[in-house]
Length: 393
Image (cartoon, rainbow, N blue to C red; front, side, top):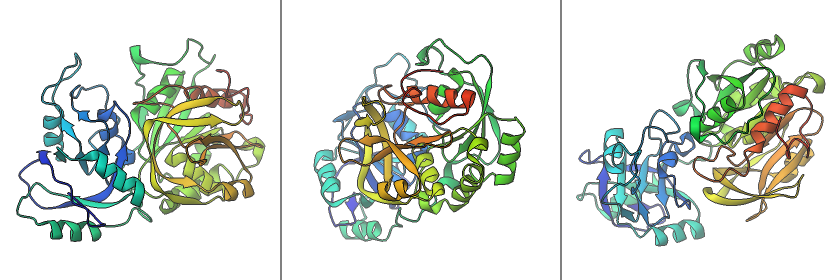
């Protein structure tokens, strides 16, 4: 494996072997101790080679439940030690076999501590991996340097649905939703930019009927559905790539959410890329982080309640705070490691969003109340406040 700065990391290939060639993508790292299966299938990782900092990966195998999309999304997978056996009652296959079936190359035996330190010091950068021993280090470095940039890349087209579909699956015994449900069924339009399944499950578990719709659904269609009572709220999902490149969705949100009078604005909730797209739609700016936030132990302070939450995060871009405030957005959550914006709301209409992942999967459930706040907003159609963030519907 090579990085664009010339660094070389040796390892043993596993997964999709025998195809040869060189695979290039942006290299990023995740600090979570568990949940590699969810990360592998998270659409937000599309176009990236994922490095796991946990020392052993693969020990719980792969099961049919903990997948977040229809396929493995990463462009490559790098680990320190590939577990020689799996031990979990739900496991149906091994990590190695899963990657082989999915056409994804892995690399084991890599000094992931040194690799992660390099990425932290220099920043996320392109890398290249191969299972072909005949490819020299110089050729790998050149391949890494020749890869495309994540900035300006619209990767939503590669991961989002192209046809509307109804989602009815909840989390079952694994639900974190409380027993209280709204008195009536709420219908949510989920704008799919690469939605994780557990987000949809959390909405379903809170009494919502969810219709997943394409990211490029015309504004006229959304407005008709929301104005006619065909839907109670709009959800904007997570996804990969540079948010500023998803111009179609930004323009649609600007017209649907911010083009209406405050009293007519549909209750709207965004997560991760959805948070960035809503911020851009209101007039804020985004920028690329040095190495991003990816892990299940990221501390966030809820500014409105003073509560500190441990969150799951996966993003490489962030919202510029001054531009958000100038556009009328109010910061509701702050990342405590670096002070970046982790959430915002509009004070005159029921629109809010967070950069982190309240659905966890993997990760803690401290922020699950945000789904309840969305339900409350659909019921009373008022802006979220500290009461919304402190209680369920």
